[in-house]
Image (cartoon, rainbow, N blue to C red; front, side, top):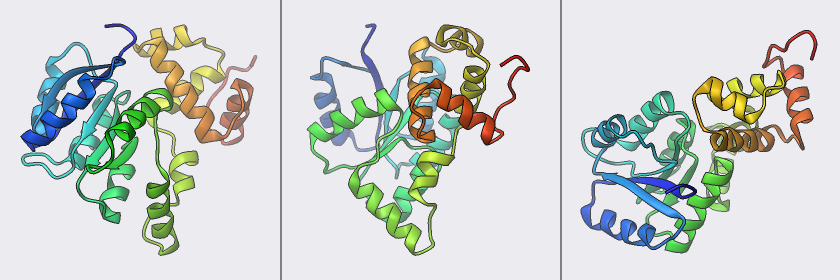
Length: 224
């Protein structure tokens, strides 16, 4: 189903999984590819499936493999998949751990269905979404010297895939050319481009090039 946001759900609570699937399946823009009850099962299904999800809703406390370890593995094997943590636990350690290993968003399980749907769409469009509550928690941690500054997370930490795309952008490759070189879709390239603009606070491609060169993040051809 082209154009739909492809989703996977991982949670060890059968009743909760059924509830969230009921909500997601009623959204016309969504297509649920599969569900899993722990990190091990999720990784097995990802490996076996030709079609990969755009967004995974990830519980944190699960048997066999928890959400933190599973997110770490997915970030290495499938860097184009966005993780939305969906947990009963709102402690600072849970939030900062998931964001530090690459989660694109963090929601509590008592979040309204409307907010869950909106967050999935936002993450799909821009690559991440941290609401005011998460910002406040991270800012408090920063003041106490216990966590990275939220601005560092958003603006300074570029993933390996983002650095690859930034270098290709700086060398004047188009979205389609980048997609072919990295074996990903042009839409995925565009999502990463939007993330780069937000993280680097650049207004356009020229701004990305200046950012990459000034911060010595890329090697550009002599004729650029």
